[in-house]
Length: 271
Image 1 (tube, rainbow, N blue to C red):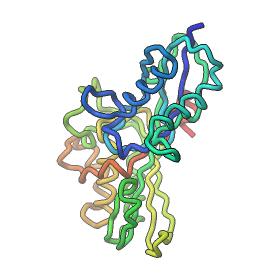
Image 2 (image 1 turned 180 degrees about the vertical axis):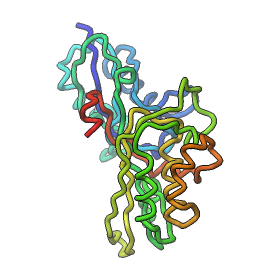
Image 3 (image 1 turned 90 degrees about the vertical axis):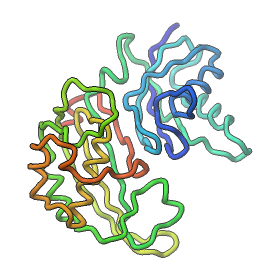
């Protein structure tokens, strides 16, 4: 029987050219579709919720597909994960992509169109030294950040605004650049890395009903500029009102960004 299946997917994006399939690049969607089509002996086309860029990671990407698979839905993660591991070189190799969950959905369900919003996490390593093994997973900022300034700047983001100042050129045209941010929170952990270097992990947790092209990365770059004293946190409201990309800060690199969660229940998004 043909099913409509929703997958929850985690991936290390450092070796991929983003989520969306491309004819000449290795992408998460393309890799998954190839492995799954071979495994299930039928063409698998995934409808992903977020088109994450090259280098961006995911704790909870969501994607749906329709197919007659011949196995119980709850066994899909084990079957696909075994196939993904088998596609890697070496007996002990671990796949950079993993299916966390599979669930049956109504036939009319679509992972992207039915999404009510998302949460992203952006990770900053604020330390003089950087652990070489973290280079693809955090934005390393050497100069000490004024976290209180960043918190003050982030506070102005909450609510419904025109976020055009935080949209990079080159994305798909949007009908509107108005979005609602339900929360923008910064958390700090003092830590020592495995090599013994002290520092801080600064994380931005941001959730909203939708995000423009590079919006989270530009918001992060603007907050970092506030933490470095280049922009006053009092300017955040003016930056939003300007609706001009030139008024915001720099674009933070992709490798500190993680798609954390996709929401299909708006009440959970608003908490």
